[in-house]
Figure 1: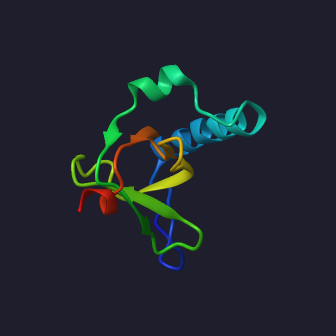
Figure 2: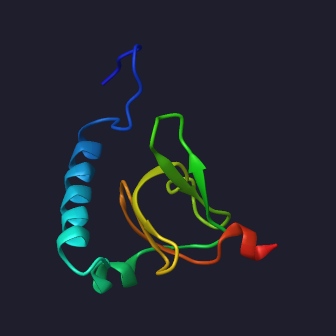
Length: 104
């Protein structure tokens, strides 16, 4: 998927499969009660010291945190609820602990 004239979030077939799962979860949020399935959220990693980060693609934010491996850093975010403490990234649900500003 290399094209020097544009940037892609999708890096290959695994990301395309991940986007399909994101679409399913977004439908669940939009047509359900607006919260992720609790069983998935309970199994999701907790991200402490998190913050939103602008990605150099218009309209995309990502999450980073001080306590997670680099696999979570820079993942695009498709849904986020600060008040309920969750986010849906490209590769799954994340529980949001304290925001980085709350840790100082």
